[in-house]
Image (cartoon, rainbow over all chains, first blue to last red; front, side, top):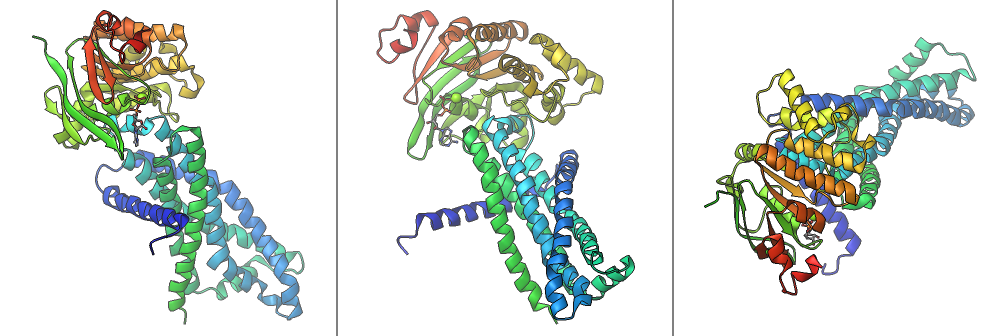
Length: 256
Length: 243
Ligand SMILES: Nc1ncnc2c1ncn2[C@@H]1O[C@H](COP(=O)(O)OP(=O)(O)O)[C@@H](O)[C@H]1O
Ligand SMILES: [Mg+2]
């Protein structure tokens, strides 16, 4: 135990620091004064900026997944089950994880870069001397915004993805829209939907808090800002996978 | 006997093994421009950030306008910060806001009762003081370095502070703009009777603005005197600054 590898030490240290930062979020986030104006502005920016990319990828994945599955399903003679299978795959896993990763790339990096450059150009200090708690103004609002907007984006992505899948099915056969969705939803239970939805709040929290943490403790200089943006994406993507792993273990307990 | 508006005694601050300030003492008198002169990395920024409560020192006493800064709660500290303005070395203009929103930020955030008309009037007056009224709706990124410095200065003036802390106000500017900023520091003092602590190592600026100079060397206040007194010094640590 005396010679823990340096990289492991650094990883554990950082995990601890992020946990401390998160605790501060829960301690300070719910004390007055809440920064409504900034929160609403962030919700708009965070949701609006990622929607086109999320929508496009969701559509393509729904379509491609359906087309990729078809040969195997046909081989086993179960092509009527394609909507059911794609529906489960999208709602339980692909929608949440894909949207969260795109969100981490797009929003995590921009929060890391924004707060990082605010840190190195002393804007965070300037807020503090202007009667503003920068942690509440910047960190709490952004983290709550990512927590709220990611689940909404995931719901939209699921719907768009299923539309892509509908198109994929209709390239080979004719299936009406109502019938397609009946097939999808007949096979989805609350045990599929609820855990998949709940975990996205945690994904959103991870993207927001890690981006803010990386920016808030940015190193001096322009290199530092780039590093904050970059490491926000890496760290929040890893966090998303770890949370996903935990989520599947938990939801498995409730599986009939 | 002159009134002391900032009184610092035995201020010490280390970052790990790096001892930045070591029993530093300093008095700022009402109405004067006091320059703190020191090498790059000698702890000048750390010193003024301690004064405004942005950095917590390890030991020492800091009294600002009779209040002991280190014992204040958040509300009391904010009251002090209304009277003590800070011009940041990197200007610290908010990139996402226009010039007007930048100037309004301290007005709106400190709990001061204002009508919209007052706020507009105060923003315009502050911009007038730095000669940049026409930039009111521009974004900071669209301004030159010298203009950004002036806007930042306008923002520090907006609450009519009693004390202004300038962190290297001329660093990174061309010589002509530097002289303009130095002149502006003097104009502001004459117009509003502010007291100022100016951090600098730009000797032209120092010569223009300083009533007194304090030398920050090895974490201590090594010497205090007028420009002429210190320039005449033969001390091996002071001399290099004035050569
Ligand atoms: N937050 C900090 N953490 C660690 N070291 C710091 C911090 N702030 C300043 N320092 C160190 O304190 C010393 C003085 O810094 P500073 O006051 O910025 O110098 P300057 O006189 O150029 O303004 C430097 O060696 C710097 O590395
Ligand atoms: Mg400095």
